[in-house]
Length: 397
Ligand SMILES: *[C@@H]1O[C@H](CO)[C@@H](O)[C@H](O)[C@H]1NC(C)=O
Ligand SMILES: *[C@@H]1O[C@H](CO)[C@@H](O)[C@H](O)[C@H]1NC(C)=O
Ligand SMILES: *[C@@H]1O[C@H](CO)[C@@H](O)[C@H](O)[C@H]1NC(C)=O
Ligand SMILES: *[C@@H]1O[C@H](CO)[C@@H](O)[C@H](O)[C@H]1NC(C)=O
Ligand SMILES: *[C@@H]1O[C@H](CO)[C@@H](O)[C@H](O)[C@H]1NC(C)=O
Ligand SMILES: *[C@@H]1O[C@H](CO)[C@@H](O)[C@H](O)[C@H]1NC(C)=O
Image (cartoon, rainbow, N blue to C red; front, side, top):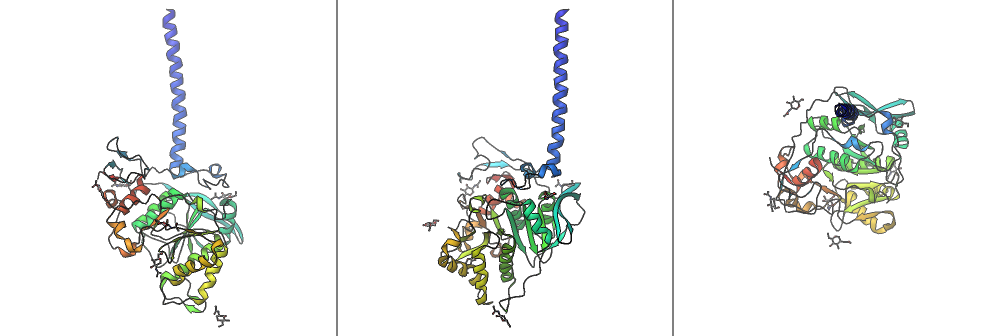
């Protein structure tokens, strides 16, 4: 009799525990699901002065869309391993559905009156339009001061220039997603004449909550000389944008592989492309940096017919004259260089010492996709899988 009572009691306690645990987990599950859908309430995004997370909390970078892959056997290099380059092992990579159903998405929306204002994170319908702001919209300055302040000279904000292009390609997507996932910037600005279009852009808007399109008409002239090439216009715009806001400029075919924070302590950073020139495909700059102003001034001697002179050879010359104003990386942003594109599209290049890699897509006309890179056994494949799945190994299919 006594024993029976004792058991009943134990069972009741267990049941109570079970109910408690279920409710607790259930509630948490809701919270986790919510944050995965990027519906973070305003409380969650406080603490914006925090160097690492910025205004974005870490859980916002986990995605329900791109799920964790599984290695086919135990001897596989671990997730994120970039020391073993045998590429013998395979992973079961999950499918990525770009058109997945998402009831809402979070975007940065300006709240402005005249010259005051800031940006808020707002949950909107997927079908709602994406806001377009002008490049020097007063809200942006306020937003950066309030929400993206930093102890480093280089703020954790990323800029792209998007001229003369419409549909987003796979490698553009990969570039922006690499920045989002690895650098976790406070905000990603796309400066362009027209907003990108297409499935990759729509997918990005659904999974990257801190992207903002800023409209800017390409410059027509500099130092009284007409700018002929659209590439030169983009060269000049990136300098103007960094002068105005500071931050990290990325080419649309530059993929980030490692966090740039160790370099954000310098006022200005470029990487060598070849021994005689510096790449302008990835630039770190403090707002209104001294070297930047000297470089912009050097455009007084701009010659529209010299292809890479003012954009790559000039900064190399200036870096010799003003070595204290610039930190120069030894090719860690652009290896392999333009002369070794085979190392990108045919061979497997060990990029473990790189901060970033330049894909030189203009030399290569083949179309890649979220599907084709799964089994692509070359550098582009390892880079794409590392960004998308968190490992560089080949996928089973
Ligand atoms: C992707 O998701 C959409 C919407 O949920 C669905 O209609 C479609 O069938 C999915 N595609 C694949 C390949 O799973
Ligand atoms: C920026 O900061 C302001 C003031 O603290 C806040 O109201 C706003 O929601 C923040 N915006 C974002 C996008 O976090
Ligand atoms: C551009 O032209 C104006 C007058 O035509 C002149 O005052 C100015 O110095 C020129 N600027 C440069 C950088 O040559
Ligand atoms: C210098 O570096 C860039 C890489 O950014 C390269 O594409 C360019 O052709 C190089 N050479 C010259 C002469 O500008
Ligand atoms: C740059 O790196 C290469 C190897 O990639 C090395 O041979 C060279 O000595 C380095 N140069 C400097 C200045 O460190
Ligand atoms: C991938 O390519 C490398 C050479 O870059 C080769 O050693 C490796 O065996 C290949 N992996 C597979 C699974 O074919």
